[in-house]
Length: 106
Image (cartoon, rainbow, N blue to C red; front, side, top):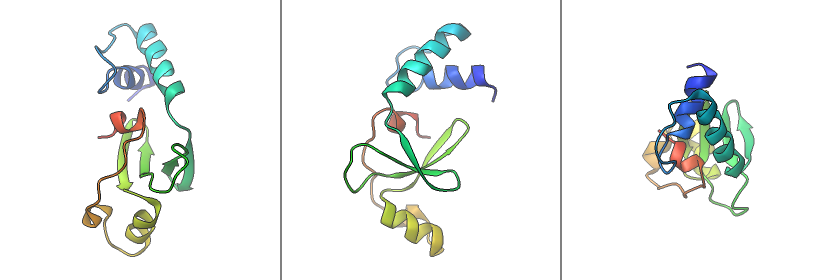
């Protein structure tokens, strides 16, 4: 997926309203949405944890190009799943909603 397609995808995800068809408008909307998103703190490879809210319990996200997937509902569950051969899905917990990022998840 090229940058223009990615911008249209971000601009048109849940909660963003109607997807802009014009590339320039899609880029503007995507930049606006991403400016509102909490910073992501690297954990391991392409796994990140949102910096906000600054409380325990934020989900660990896998971010690769335009794919954003929850890898664990919290850091402890993620670490156990990633390094103890269990999948995060087996943990069964629902991850906390994170502004913008939750709307972009697959």
